[in-house]
Image 1: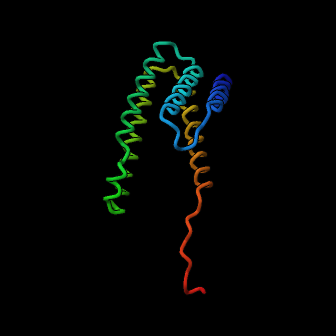
Image 2: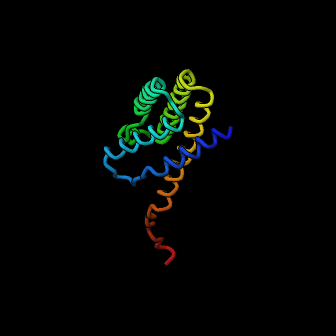
Image 3: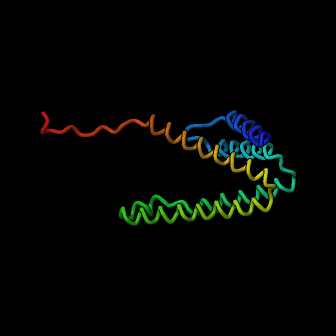
Length: 152
């Protein structure tokens, strides 16, 4: 168990050294960042070459499938609020199914110890993403509301 914590800490340290960029970053930088994060994860999980190739393939398939679950802004704009809620809920369900399918495939490739460490890495990633979202909301300028003429 101590090794798992050590691996998680090393992974967190490595991933924290990968620079995070604000919105508007060129796609090439995002690709390089993603590659660096994946390499850090592979190193942390101590994958052999066969495992690396299989995990890359599984994660690539998941990434492609996840893109298909994104809702086009044009389609959302044409929907009423109730249909938007339904469409978003369906997209969330599809993404959850994809994550479960990916996890099942990874279970076939990774050892139990590696799988536990993978889950820790993913949880940390989700936490960092949530923190970035919260920071963006905090720094977002407030929209000015029209003044109420009756209060004058």
